Length: 320
Image (tube, rainbow, N blue to C red; front, top):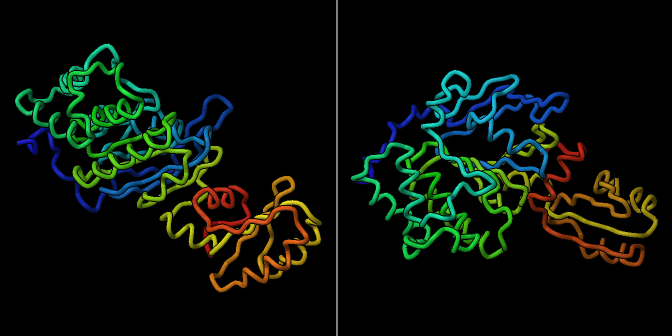
C-alpha cells in the first residue's frame, strides 16, 4: 500500500540521476561555481565537499531550481533544470541548512502539511508517516510540538519532511551543521537506514569531511571549481600510506634531506607535511632520525581532510 504513494516509474538505468556540464553561477564579479561537470548514477550516495564559500550550496540551489545557472546545463531525474523546473521539483527532496519546520505545530501536523503541499493521497499518508517516524526513532514524538524537540530530532524530522513524497533524488545541504557529535552520529545512522530502505539517490554537501567517508563517491570544490573526485577509499589510498607532519627545526635542511624519498612537502607556517607512499616505509628509522631535529613530529593515517588539503594545494592531482 505504501508503495503506491506517488512512487515514480523508475528511470532508464542508463541515465544519471544528476548530470551537469559546464554548470556555472556568477553573482556580479563573483564566480560562485565555475564550469562544474558532475555525473551521479541512480541510487548512489554522493558527497560534494569543501569549506564554507566553496560553492556547495550554490550548486545545490541550481540543481533544485532555486536559482538559475549563469551558464552550462544540469539534468536532475531526467529533467532539465531550466526547461522543466516544475518536473525537477516534483522529483526531488531538499533539506536546507536552516530548518523549514513550523515550531508551533506538532510533528504530525508538520508532516500532514507537507503531504498536502505535495498533494499526496490522504488514505496513504498516514501509513507513510508511521513508516518514516519509526525509521527515524520519532514515533513517540508524533504529537509533540516541534519546538520541544532536540536539535537532532528536528534535523531528523527535516529529513523525513524531505522524503515524505518519495523523491528520486534527495539533496542534503549540511545536514549535521550545528549539531553536537552524538546528534551528528544519530543523523548519519538515520541516513544509512534511509538509503537501505528507500533506495534513492542522495547528494550531500558538508564541510565535515570525515563524515563523507561513507559516500560512494565524493567531489571536492574550492572557490567554485572542481579540484578532485573519486571514491573516498581510492582518494585516501592514492594520497599515501601515512602523512608525516613536522614543526620547528631547520625546515629548509629537513626538506632537502627528505625530498628525494618523499617528494616536496606542503608548508603551512612552521609546519611541513610529507606524503609517505608505502606501508613498508621504515617509520621507526625516520622517527629516530628526525625527533632530535624538530619540536613536534606526528605520523598519521590520511583521511579526507588530508586529501582536500593536498588537492587544494595544487601539488597533487589525486592520482598516484
